[in-house]
Length: 356
Image 1 (cartoon, helix red, strand yellow):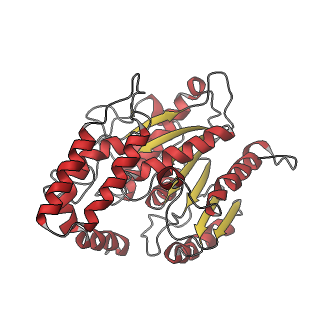
Image 2 (spheres, one colour):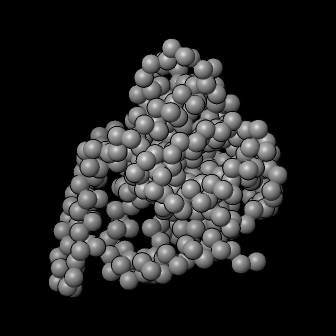
């Protein structure tokens, strides 16, 4: 069966192929830095990302070569922070469930090389402070620099509100991995968090997925494939289960930030149980608004708690953008406050006297 959504992603990559062939090698060397904003000086990562914008403006080969040289010098000067936190890898060596055959990336069409290993980073509250919930954050696109604003900045904002956060670097959907591979990485993250709930001082039934754009698509897929307590080896028969596989893999709540499931998505089933879902969408994000038409009826049919916020004047993307431009969008940025109240109501009961 043809997959229209997969064809959309392939068309986008084809349109960007010349740029990636020219600059992809240098950009890809920066991806592990962008995706680890808790481990590197974030101000330097922001400046590197801003410098990268110059690539789009270069006209001559001489300009392109000079920009690549300067970019590489800036990138290679960035060093790990003292006592940088460790990555927490999801899968044991040699036991990662795999569907996609991906062995080379010669023209750098993809941000991640074939040897990429999924992991998460911790953004925890001070020791002894009980989190309101745990939030797993997944950036849009194929993650990369979007991790800085959509995960790190938003993680700081949720930390300030009383949540522990985790930045998940799963295999990005269609980058080149499948929805199932992205979903199984997300499910594994939730299993690890539930298995270590005492360590993280978390209630294992109060875990939230916050996905942005393509990251939201992965959150939806995690619900589809794992909300009925399905196991990894049901989808990947060669996978060897361990002690975490007995734990649920789906989130307890879903913050879907301009990331509603694409119209035309080929689902494995239509009747999977959904979870309480919060949507934040710009009113100029016409594609995402259209996608909502296919998603909302199933949520309403199940009487799942749903909250929808649309924001005047805002296009697709740009959550947490104030870490990039120092301003952000004072209207759209309100979604974090609304999401906080949604989660407090869901897990702890609505408090009419709650103040921001």
